Image (cartoon, rainbow, N blue to C red; front, side, top):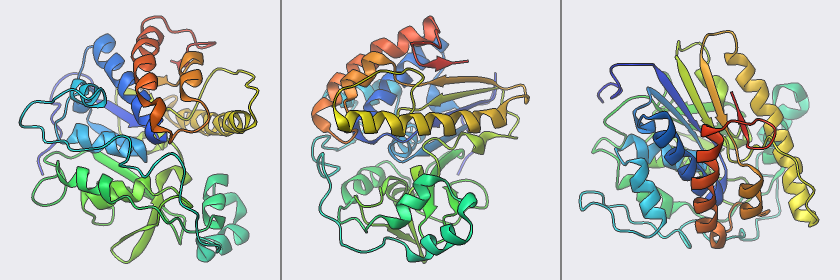
Length: 328
């Protein structure tokens, strides 16, 4: 592997958070806004941390696809001939609802650890341990990622970190980070996307891994202590706005968002005082209405993308923490 492509200017980090099918669409709109407003290519950031859906985008950016490539592909437009990205947005993840899981505890080993050390594990990790094993497959995502990987199974550049959770120990692993267990890019991304109860855990080097969002939907704190000048965080599962939806499922989704946002603020606090310029972008009111309550619903994908292309641009150009979802 060669070193990071960015050689001059500010040392930048990029965090691409979890968020399912719709979170990925929103993040592409937000990436477009970063490129347009901030004036740099997000794919050239020195370190890119991707979790779950964000790991797919991190892999594609690391392989050299541009933000406009990602946007155009979402819209169904043809890409340059040399970009052979074959992906069905409506069927590739298996649909808007999971297959019925087996009736058993997903990780008895992790469950025992959470009982003995309850404060060591975040609530989503405890829930992941209890959740029955999923029956869905991520083979289509793996196939897409393999199509952009190098012959040795990773990328030509360093600094692409793909976060997953060891399903039996609860340990957070950032594949691609120095000292991480060896893995192929498609294995790492599938592991990072393996939502407990929805998809089967992904075996890598004798261990089982599931969605990195079980540890944190963003994992911003991995960038602490790296001496970066600027960090951009795209967090589609967080929100700095509050609304009062009527539907029960949407109210439950908003409660999860509040928990995710508290965790995000806790993690970003670890970068405070280090001199890093931190920009956090989350969905605003219009984005939340476009997303609804099910982030895996592909029927809303294009609406979410187009909404984010507008709202994310406005949030970066006119930051208003109270209602536009950006904190500086």
